[in-house]
Length: 64
Image 1 (cartoon, helix red, strand yellow):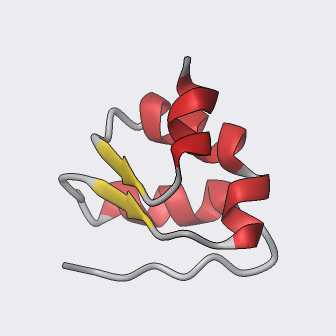
Image 2 (cartoon, one colour):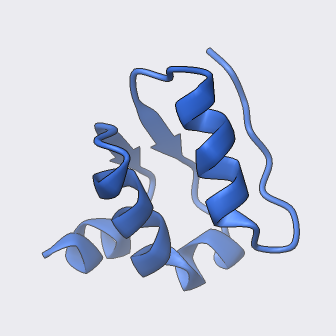
């Protein structure tokens, strides 16, 4: 398991690193900043073809 921190809402950069690491899946922990950016995170996970587990239902709702 590898932990990636997001700084300054640089989700594109973080997902570039996640793809370079050849990660098998993504787990997003509950966090106010992450929840407010849920649409972008869900979109990047889908575009990266990463199975994802989210700590809040709002992420799942954003995927629909």
